[in-house]
Amino acid sequence: MLDAGGAAAPNTADFIKDVTEADFMAEVIDASMQVPVIVDFWAPWCGPCKTLGPALEAEVTRHKGRVKMVKVDVDQNQMIAAQLRVQSIPTVFAFFQGQPVDAFQGALPPSELKKFVDKLVEIGGDDGGLGAALEAAEAMLAEGAREDAAETFQAILGEEPDNPQAWGGLIRSHLAAGNPDAADAVLAQVPAAAAHAAPVESARAQLALARQAANAGPLADLEQRVAADPADHQARLDYATALHAGGQVEQAIDQLLESFRRDRDWNEGAAKAQLLTIFDALPPTDPLVQKGRRRLSSLIFA
Image (tube, rainbow, N blue to C red):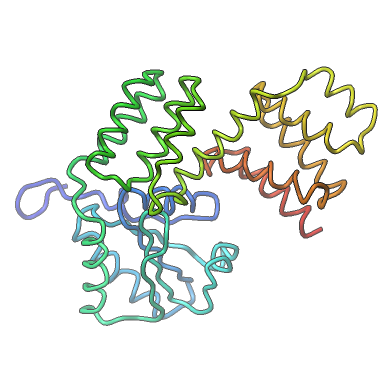
């Protein structure tokens, strides 16, 4: 489709989407590392939502991808609404760099909506090609070109020193090269503004697991210890560590969930802490993460 000037009209599906609890992390938190993301909490029965939603979409479309928008039906996704303490609708949040940066409740006049979206676009800025560079670096890392990826992530940090995705990528590049000491040194250099962003926290978790893997005991011996005494929580924790080090992630999660089921408070909640480290190290949309979190929640609230 062409616009009035003959140019291809933007595909709004690229930056306006319906999301659920299953893809909220990917479409909001992760996506906001690149551009601001507006989250519109609505419901089919909400009258003001029917006016606000299309008006917001029009403002977002006007900026052709420099800001994104997702729509969350609160009736179908009550957990997200509860986590963000949505008490009435419409409620709108704005995320950037993994954090909420603005919000409002109720309908706004068109002039205020324009200011709201324009402000977010200004916050996001023109990345000068950094987004494409990040994608290229991630592709290099996935293909095994670890040194090239590290150099690209380092160059991005030269342009944007607080970029959390570049810091996380640089740490993961060193881990992929089998150099946890170098990864640790990079982690120590992450500025405060990026230290707790999702990409850095994920890399931090991967580093912790790599350290544990280096000290993992013999898998067969640990399996026998657990079989001989199922209440030996230290043996089960060590067994889970060895399983994870051997690439058996799902089995490691199973063992940690069993330990939590038996005694959630053992060693100050060590099983839950290890589970969260494994979840943080994986992409939030990984089926193992989604299934594991559901099982952990069911045990917590049992």
